[in-house]
Every structure is written in structure tokens, then in C-alpha cells.
Length: 132
Image (cartoon, rainbow, N blue to C red):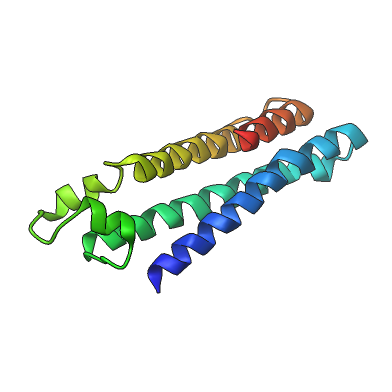
């Protein structure tokens, strides 16, 4: 059941990234401060969803959940736990998920630490980061 949660979190993260890409820019165009401020909320949601999906994948490796094709192809029962954790990002799909996690972390960092920057600039930057 855990892999389904990870998949659902990734689908939710895609929707949040699309909202992060469009909604704050729409707020900039309309001059609506609430719509621009929503970029920070979307950045938090995006990070939480991607981090959750990544940790579901790590959990699948740690408990040897071979119902996940990615785990079955990149792990075995003889590997020590730390090697199984490292195998999470050892192949293409896991390294791409790690990259998305890092990018969503930087997006969240911009949202949290950009208080002195004008709201329209922050909304534009976060929207572009959501597009990436």
C-alpha cells in the first residue's frame, strides 16, 4: 500500500507544481497580493509531497518491497541497509526523484528566506521554479 501513497504524492506534487507555475503569475498580472502570497504555500506543499514520495521510495528499499519494479531491479536481500538506502538514487528514476526533491527544497528556501524581496519578484521567481 505504501507505493500507492508515493504515487499519489507524486501526482499531487505535479498538480501543486502546475498551480505554483500559473497562480502566482496570474496574481502578478492582476496585482492581487493574496494570489502572489499563495506561492509560498504552494512551495511548502510541493516540498512536502515530493519529500513524502521520496521517503516512501526509501522505505520500499529498506524493507525490500519487491512489488515495486524499481526496487526489484536495483536491490537484493543481501545488501546492507545503507547500500539499500543509497540504491534509492542509484538508478535513473531515483536520481531524478532526488533531483526533484532538491529543487523543491530550493524552491521552499526561496519562499522562506525572501522576505525582504518585493512580493511580485518572489512570485515570479517561485513560478519559474515551479515550472522547472
